[in-house]
Length: 315
Image (tube, rainbow, N blue to C red; front, side, top):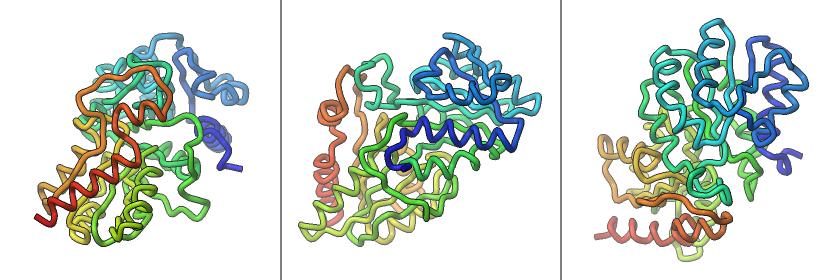
């Protein structure tokens, strides 16, 4: 069942199915095939899979060349390497050149766990969304990823995907999901406050909404999976309906989802808004529960932030 399938396997399986139909699909790795879970693609299409070694910047250059020759390359590495280490090559060879290279950065934010601070990319989506016309996407669960892969592949723009490689603690959607890249999803209705969330924070936002509901507070939960282009229409609609918000992301408070939502609100419908995000910190070694507490990304932190936003709303 998909609920028990790691996200990296879903990605690889979908790429294999696409590759059977479309010989433009190719896969690149920087000596992390086992971590990325792309081994089965290498076995199925050895002539369309390339391990460039521990040379991430070169991987982006190779991918740009493949894209320029008509291929659709998917590059895989840890988010710290896929975004930070390759940024200039991605900027010039891919984004500036408007080539449809797809980059998958895995284990973003605190999901890097015991790999520690050097491998915790708190800023990957921020730097990627700083580039013109680059799509930045973070799947919520396996059902969403399964539906997204084909759309990402056929999108003619550069795409950055931040991927929690393994299965989330909870499956949010099912096969009935109506998914469109760039279109946020309202998961839960509410009239008092909106919780905007992405990635692993969606489950926590839903849990926070349950806690708030017991206290008579009705929280709307909106999953913003595509950070760029941002779904301004849905954000503004939710802001007008509830009048307060909390933005929840496993990422730096700077330049990521908090910034993206704030940019929309300040121009269209300013409301009290609190942020659950990494604030002026580098990463450290630990497991997810510990890191969630240290960096204040817990369900309880969302509840507290919601109450603070509501207090400002009522002032």
